[in-house]
Image 1 (cartoon, rainbow, N blue to C red):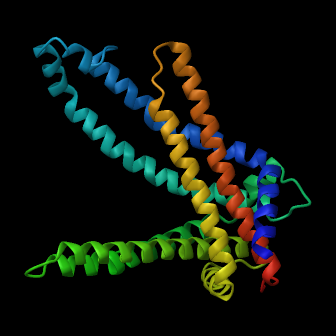
Image 2 (image 1 turned 180 degrees about the vertical axis):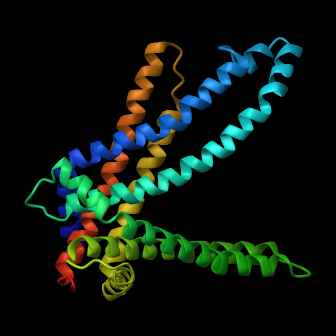
Image 3 (image 1 turned 30 degrees about the horizontal axis):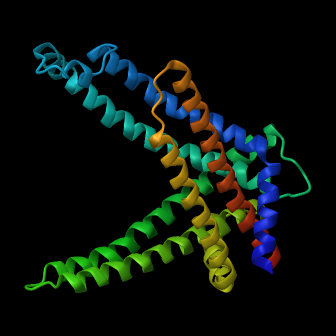
Length: 290
């Protein structure tokens, strides 16, 4: 069965690409540090080493409230501008590193070297960034049409029925989730085509993504659905573990950091598994059109 073969081959290619995954993990760790460490310094400068909740535990603390007013504007300004910078840089880094990850799973018989990883990342950066932009626009537009429009029309009617609104919202949500899987397949097939073809082109890649997705919609959709369910289960387990862990010592905090980074590494591994599975499915279905 093509789906099972693609999933198995994708898993093998993801494990073989551990060096590429390690590069992505390290770069993303640096990106998060660029935002978290300055924010932590600002909070410490404003409120000291103690937390506000601890200082206010015994009652209203006028000194803390005055410090809060003094540093509130600078904290909000940094968080808003810093978060915007973090998102923009994260999108660009994702588009850059995704080229190396797709290249690392495109040749099962060869382990991609670090220089080749960065060459592929730089070569396909603008193509991957353009694909991300078009796919995000399609996701937002379809969400507006499928969920926002019908729910808005029903809620604005004179006597909206809660039962009808709930049913429409559930049906629209399920349709939208199905479209998200399809758009993910389109984007991944397009990226895999860009890596495989000798003459990459953005709109040709996007067209190939749609063509390949709907030409083999059954196998491809089921494969992506399985991958997304596994990723969602893992994300839920990871967030639960991090959420219930309450370290009370420096060693516990350090251990929590190590565990969280291991979980993040596994998340990148799962994403690479998805890339490898889609690439294998593309190679099984038909040769790439140059």
